[in-house]
Length: 154
Image 1 (spheres, rainbow, N blue to C red):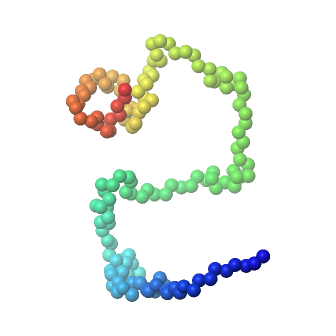
Image 2: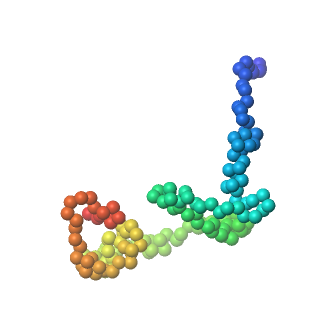
Image 3: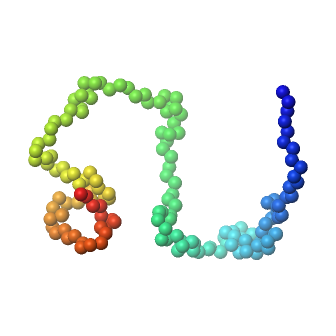
């Protein structure tokens, strides 16, 4: 079988400055780098810089603080888990039939059940009082768009 080679006569020149060069020295930025260093050449702490970027990102959505690392669950590091995994066993059909048997609900509904709780969007709605809506005397805004923080149902 014949061998093929890609032959190119084009010459390439290395970029200047090279990535192997000390770019701080090439561009005269060593003094700036020393002034911004976290530690001085003698090992003492350098000047603490203000974190001025926070003012620039405060209006962006999302978290701006890095949370501390959580410890790894020791069960993950347990070698016996990899060698002896939990196996899923078949469930008894009669037990399933009893557990998943549903009676028809009465025409008055289920006491204490509120369908609004199925569509909650925050924890405060979870902890609401049953008579809260009557006490507030709900008022609707005239015109305009609904408040984006309050979900609208039906």
